[in-house]
Image 1: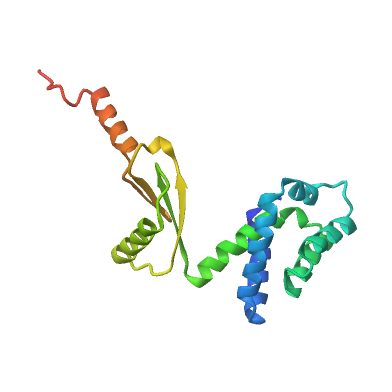
Image 2: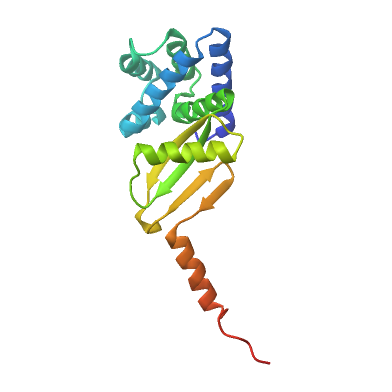
Length: 187
């Protein structure tokens, strides 16, 4: 599908319906389950995008995977996507739904990248520091490990990037040496 506008519209419709029926949390959990299925099975996503597989088979496979695990609204939504020929966009719609849900709930996603895995105490300390320094109260911390950082951390919060890594400092020093910032210019 790769049409973020269309995915956003479908996701918005589903959120509005979930809010109207007081089932937002249930639908959110359904979307997390579907996202896990899409991430764990590349074959499933390929099947959804395949023009060779009939809509009836896609609908049957979706029902078999989600039977008893998702709500009636999610099942009806999946059937709607298949009937409209939009099932290929299910992964993008799920992502858009989760983003819109977090925006609706006021949850801010913060990404912490470090050179080595961090413990739960460090995560809680980072969340506390961010809450102390900003007006953000609902924080979801995602962590990643990138050994190229050598040490320190990189923190991404929306459009803000805080780079406190050793690799950043070394690159800055290297640039200063390349520009001869340490040699006095005589003229």
